[in-house]
Image (cartoon, rainbow, N blue to C red; front, side):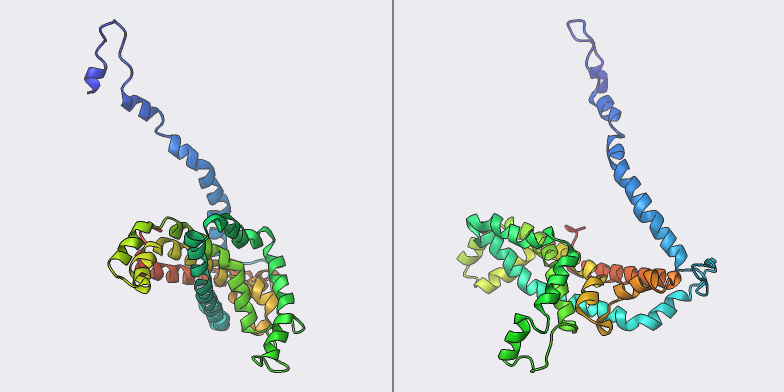
Length: 304
């Protein structure tokens, strides 16, 4: 083929260059396009991660004023885990409960927007993402007002005797879980909507024609086809919710503190960098392990 391409034409003009020469000219183009992103990740992710790993192995007896010596103190990891395992387990418990609540609300919401909303679809999508136009801190402070002891929510629950006369929601695990659910709900709904919006109606009609019940149609058709969005949404929800510390700080008490609060205190209050770095790596490792097991069981090649 290449030999024929170099044969002069009948008009005496040389033949055009072979396609392989043109493709070879732009062979480096994809790598050049990746260069800015790769440089950004190297400078602001890889290098800080290496620095954090080094800090986790510093001498735990060092201080910020005297400096930290690299002693390869691997004992920082079991020591940190032994001291703060309640906050560790609490982080995964709160994030797991919030994820279940978000799924119970988010899946029907995403399905209704994608399949039933009609001309109201765009408006409902704006309503889902509208809270994100304000800062995370302001949204959480708003929940502090809503759940306050003198707020209408607590008053209503007291009137229907779901709370005692002195019962409260603020500064309880319920408030922290509700805050996590609210703040991260859009991260679950939007990927779900993207999957459900592409659902082929002919498959649903075929299932109905085969006398499948609505529940069976959902279980055998709708749910499997929405799995990529469901898995992506649960990961986008669960990972930041586990490491969050704002909700526990503003809506809870030290009894509801999560591991993010401990890491924040280690770096900014106690100035215990080795412990803070060790806890950060333990949290990251635990989340990666959970995500790996979850993806292995879900079989999500489409997500990866």
